[in-house]
Image 1 (cartoon, rainbow, N blue to C red):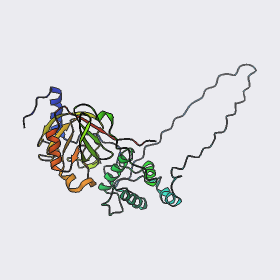
Image 2 (image 1 turned 90 degrees about the vertical axis):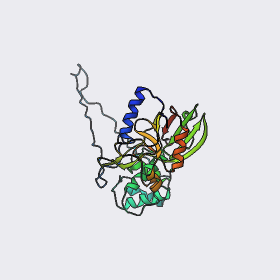
Image 3 (image 1 turned 180 degrees about the horizontal axis):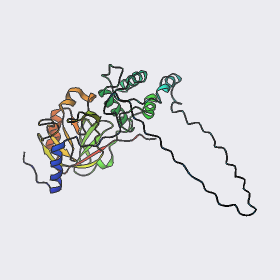
Image 4 (image 1 turned 90 degrees about the horizontal axis):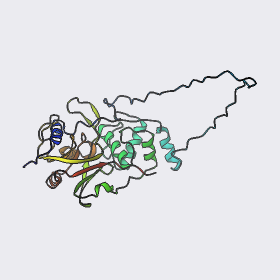
Length: 308
């Protein structure tokens, strides 16, 4: 295929991409490097205020002014609107934080609820596996939660209350002139538009809990939200991390994120994840995107947030 000339700055980015390819995305808070390690909690911080007093003026009272007693408030019950039986089931787990490697009764509840929501159909164990960490991430994105792969109070409440999925409405930034690849992380779709009109929609797999190709450390490799431009297309891009043939039919944007065919996605589906790239599970779909997306096309990636 004949490659178009690109500006020096884009060329430099392309060189960086060829060396990395989906693996430069910075880590975010998520499952620890060792799956069985305990979750680290942020250290508590405290602040102290010092008070100073001036000499009282003549005739002034030296008695301290009494402070009003603080009013005690009871925080609202996040499970107030669920049935008594469901509240009894979830309440013991609200204070539990789960991640890859966690086990116990709350994990059994988590697996059951993720299965019911359609995000963990293959689970057969009583501990959170790698596939389980990715199921958590995908569930969190679908509900507009912070996708960190840890199950804390917000995720427990969403599961207990059967929170709805976020809206599927495409943002206006995707409905502009020219070709736009609109990637919705919540619904795991890539919508291909031309001049604001939807032409095709594809199922995709995004970044998540995965092992670094060289260090073999497990961590969360997120797909970065933002607006980018396609700067190159290559049938078989070189990759220092993954070798030849790892990312066929790459439509390349941002120095370390591509839209490309993934045999892993084709074979195991959402039990795995990418290292930040947008994976396509059908080779014919990847080649269609590759052949029809021009250089300079806009790529918009977003994760919708839950509405109040």
